[in-house]
Length: 198
Image (cartoon, rainbow, N blue to C red; front, side, top):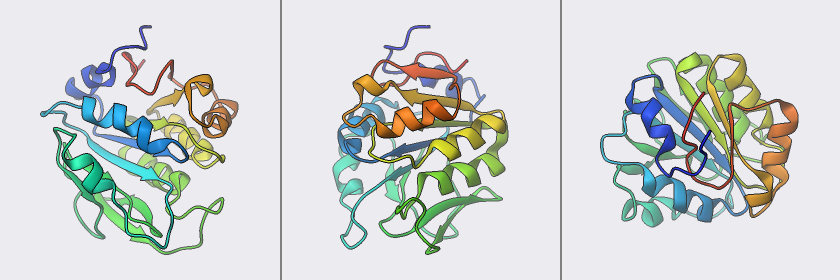
């Protein structure tokens, strides 16, 4: 497999095999997402749902940071909002982001998971329940094990699972934990989209 293509996952997505992509990141995540998200072209059909750990008490600047850099519309997820294809959604600070039937987005103030709210595990597990094998999950750089359980849920539902190779991550703990939980479909050499989704 060639892991270096910046547009790799797009082929599978554009072929209609994937309806949504869930992405989880923590420490170093803004830089990693700064490579990934601007690489998605206008016309990329799946919804892209992102949890990036950030301080709970501050307003998020992620929409401001990424709107001008991405071809796809970028917004902060709103409760009860339909998950629109071709849109990048960020989980707001201090709320879990989930996917409900519809599919629609849901926000929750339930207890933090692994000290995190929003939690990557919560998003990935709910998205796996809704999208099943038509979901792709990607774990990037980060400093705890949030996302490992969620990526396993994506894999068990038949979805595509992707992990940034730990030695290329700014902080290796999160991708290492995801790899320890099971073999992903792809392990990218960089924080770019892998060229194959298996």
